[in-house]
Length: 271
Ligand code: ARG
Image (cartoon, rainbow, N blue to C red):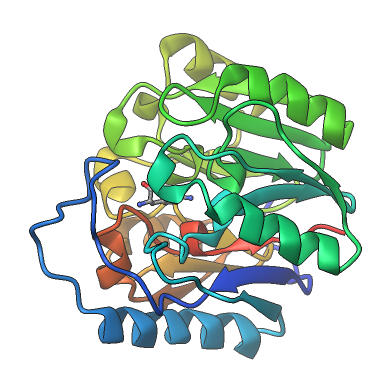
């Protein structure tokens, strides 16, 4: 299957007003390297424009001082069918972000399920609409027990996948959903058993290589037609174009210093 028509989506993002690299909780972060926050904000605005220009609705969560990673809004929750499974962060530096997300959803009438186990929202959960299942990563951040909790909260099967390369510490750095039944992923980021599971479930997946993954080429957001992708990921953009998708290139070089790109900045709201 190739790219279809775009479906209007609703996304939640957070302005990188307070973005910096103040600590290192993934291999991409180097607290001694300077960060240009003004440039990060400009680049992020480019992402918002790219989304709204293609007809999507962007909601903005108020950024909070002292939470420099809050721009990575994907980590705050995982919503499917109007139900929101909340996040519980692995590291104390990000713990307070969960409450900000929870408040946002509750104020807007979403059914919110608070988690008991550590999980970093859409960073480690991806929804595949066709089969109606969720793919979930573990190994670095999210606890596998949170996968079962999510299945119970969202009433969807959850397939656990083990991440084994610390550079790809969240599922969304190694795998992305392109449309109802198509995914793209970098096999070597997963254990041999998880690779076998992915091969069986998604025989027509787009396969990324190490260079694609290192350029954050899998950390993209697709609306079934457009794929919003990091500017550096030229090889991945070509592969997706060859499969009929329309790459929309966004430069997020400053935010890469925190270990994230397009997908990390976006939580999809599935009502
Ligand atoms: N610095 C953040 C962290 O390590 C980056 C989060 C990236 N988010 C994502 N969805 N992969 O937690």
